[in-house]
Length: 180
Image (tube, helix red, strand yellow):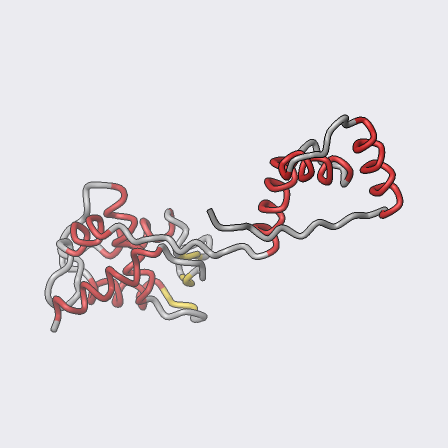
């Protein structure tokens, strides 16, 4: 079994020494290695060695959090890619909500950022990116999903910048391979 190096920090060395001495005086025998670890940990203010070890490991995790990278759902990507043709255009309106959401993300990625578009401009873009001939339903869906913002009268649209799901880049790459 490998050893785990755990630093022990003591706030008051005098109190630590006094507590350790008091614990040793109560013993009638020479403490074993494990008993000595428990005595040291109790003198430092922990219940026992296991409590000290758990506390130390938790502090290490908090001090150096490791970024967990989410793994894309490849089955979802393959299913959603079927909604696009060889030129990357949306063929049909997806029936399932997760498929629709990822398709809307793909459209969102194509909308120019930091630019205000008129209703006509966004409709022209959407007409180039889909084949079922209903840009109004796509505009409405993008707005309701929180991907674009529009003025009260619906004359101007602006892409809302946000962090896309991990599946989006894989979907865009998959759709572009269909076009190749």
